[in-house]
Image 1 (cartoon, rainbow, N blue to C red):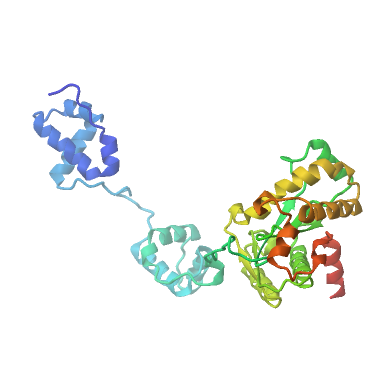
Image 2: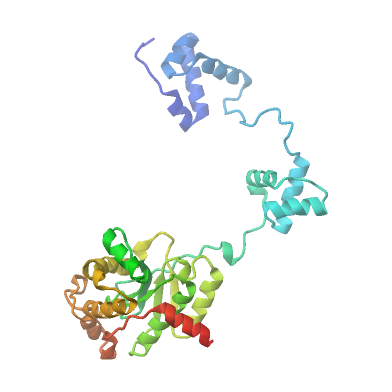
Length: 357
């Protein structure tokens, strides 16, 4: 026997429990059945070695079932069969299934027990989950680099009071003068041309208003391409409500537009607009926020900033051209007045629209 030999039994067992036990048995043959030596070599206790020998005598080296041998409160097999049968027939959830069994089958099974029965009998559930609520749609591939002007427009909402960008004094200033919380943005991935708006609330109504305003601005200035909007999963853009998303898609399809939702938690799928938020902080909010003392001031300051962003600021991603300059080269027929984007306050417009309807 070599006193330096060490074999990690636990690692072997994680890979293959039967092979690990067989290795112990083979080693026992080489050391004349020395239990203590085998336990030392494999780093286990002697009772484990005895247990391995007992399993070998029984002719089964596999793991024993973890369920206790005596289960006086276990649901009978007949009840489990009926639960699975009714589940496949009705597709009810555990709570409603429990009430159904009590009312129509005269069987009392707590919904917690039903949940456990369904979990351990997944292979016996024969129906497929159907319905749009449970279907995960694969996101359509978006080719940013071959897109022409306004074929892909990224839409998002920025929280203005960003503690990572603004100082405490600047945020207090915004609160003091009750400046709106949210900046709405729409950015063309081809030219980086950008539109912005503001709102006090981040609501579904304001989201609809923003879509319609962006579409009307672009269409009224000569943009005729099919517009694909890419958005996150915020509730203001439909979120998890497939009904809202369906209605929104139907609405904007009438204007030659489509909607694609990004994957949840993947802000990089709106990378161009997300990156522009940093520019907004560095070149607008941080240097100008203390001069804003009313909603009118905000819109006036934002008017100057968005004109600067689209018509004066040279973008490295555009080979140091301005967005409007780059846009005009790509789309010569676009109306020149598109460059004079005027920020809007969505709350007022959406309320007036709702009152008028």
